[in-house]
Length: 310
Ligand SMILES: [Zn+2]
Ligand SMILES: [Zn+2]
Image (cartoon, rainbow, N blue to C red; front, side):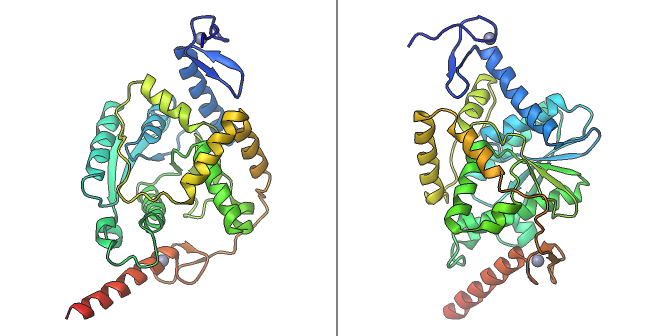
């Protein structure tokens, strides 16, 4: 298909952005990614001047792009890259290498937080003890806490992660299928409620399509990890991803419409009943937080396995 000239500048275009009806040249496309991201940050007051920002950087295309954009446009803020080491041999090493290389190119401090140190288990090690849980479930619980701990220890006011609109919509559909209407009311995909001791959790890419982030990372020539995690599950999330992509193909812009609709469920006034975990002291819905419960569960399965072996 012959593409029309760039809608913005008239140069030859390389991409038709169906949801907006624009033809874009490479330069204008890259600028548009900056613009959408910066507008999301400004409108939702994600980052204030002078605040310390911890960025979760796995080494994938989204997080590398986020680190790049924050380092480029937020010179008045201290930016720190944090990589979570789940302890997955043959996989995580590459991501750590990429993250540390990109951070040093951008002159950004890079810190690694490992599950082994924080929770005494790696994801490789839980395979025999995870029982009813999937690796992804345990990993998700641990990752959130690891990043919270990092942000708190490093004295950050903001924790930024690279969730894109596709990630956000998948999460919304999972909440719907689980009937989790409480979470629907408290979930703000732009800025998450600060339960971790006042740290603001922000998602500057929440209005950017995954496909366009991949194009952005390629055009910028970033190094990023392309291998997927060996424990990744092709669960309902990937079915929802495919379903949404099919819808978008036939109805360009429907992802934005869905996002805007879902966000209407969010209510600022909706209060989540909260207390502190009696063991670790982190904010929790119950007496014991999810992290402590998970560690208890893994420990008890390990004891059972040890006893059987004797
Ligand atoms: Zn252009
Ligand atoms: Zn706890």
